[in-house]
Amino acid sequence: MGEYVVDLKGLKGLAQNLAKQLKGNEVIALIGDLGTGKTTFTKFLVEALKPEEGTVVRSPTFAVLNEYKTKKGTVYHADLYRVKNFDFTDYVGSGILIVEWADLDPSLDADIVIRFQYEGDNLRRIKLEKKS
Image 1 (cartoon, rainbow, N blue to C red):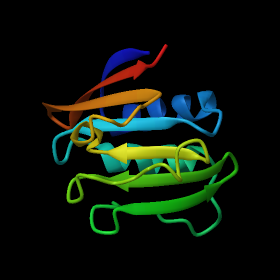
Image 2 (image 1 turned 135 degrees about the horizontal axis):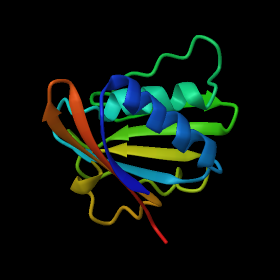
Image 3 (image 1 turned 45 degrees about the horizontal axis):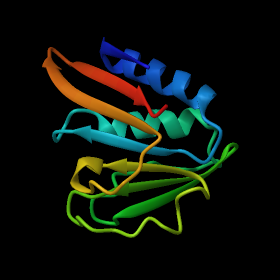
Image 4 (image 1 turned 90 degrees about the vertical axis):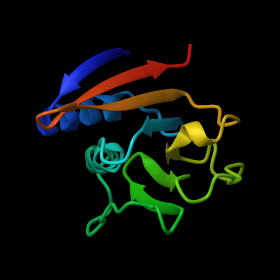
């Protein structure tokens, strides 16, 4: 799907483009160090999917899983930073599952993998890979 070096505006554009391609049942793995933009990307993606009014996208680090209702269905937003083992069985296929720190669960079968890398000066290298 491509590799990009983007600022915040570019990150939002990538999220908006991806939102247009989603069917509503994908598993999206987000991989990258702290502060590289995983939660921000998720926020932009949920915004592009037209959530219910008043929806606030927050990091699921402590909640482990947040749920957002959108025009394209439910988005499940999970974070494996604190909880390494989480059973996603009930979520896979029933909405869009976005997993931060997905590399901590090698059994996670993602449709789309997005890698985030800090590039300095508010830039991030984003690599999007789609399972064939």
